[in-house]
Amino acid sequence: MQNRLKDSWDEGQIDELHAEIVTTILDSDTESGVEAAVEYAKFLKHKGLDNQNYPIFLDLLLHQNEELIYALLADGKVLDEFTTLQKTHYLIQVCFELLKRFMPGDVFEMTLETLLGVLDLHYHSSGVGYKIYPVVVEELNNLGKFLDKTRSQADKINRIILDILGNIGELSSKDNKDHRIDRIGAHANKIRSAFLDDRAMLEDAMPASMVSQ
Image (tube, rainbow, N blue to C red; front, side, top):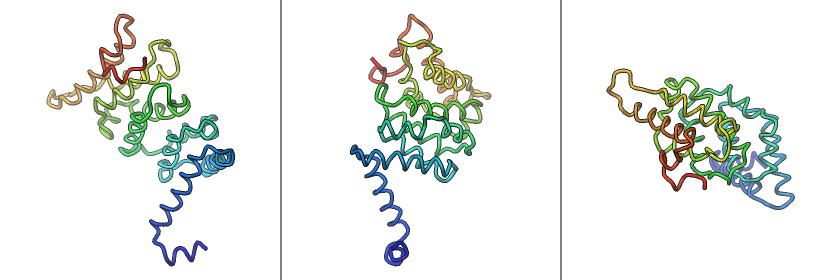
């Protein structure tokens, strides 16, 4: 059948059909749909993560299906494999786009931890990371909105975010000409300080509408 399809459809149409079928399965909340989604996640994990298929893994994180997310992320294998990927502009852009779409309290912790883990690794050397992907203020706000002042700085999610902000906060222009870098470093430090200072509020550093109540 696939050969007959290839005779009448181009490759793009076939890929679009496959994507539509997979999306229908993943979005299904029936018992059979959930089971199929979990099996699909297991299949992808068996194949392993690489520089060609990682967008599929990231797309799966959008589906707020607890069983699917658990099957995909619970053992930490996917996060470990992300560390082996080539650091690209596209990879970091997608991570920030996902953070923008998610809101505090409406995203599974394993999903958030995976995205933050990728960003933490990317900006571990902030200068190199910024050169590959020059983060902007809005993206820092979408990162900072997941800080939770009701929890300690040792909380897993808080700790990763604070580490990312701390690394980005080290950015500065060496020749005092590129003030964009200075602004980014200063804003990262401002969000971080607003969390660590008991007298301050996150609203002091970022839009109040983004701060978890």
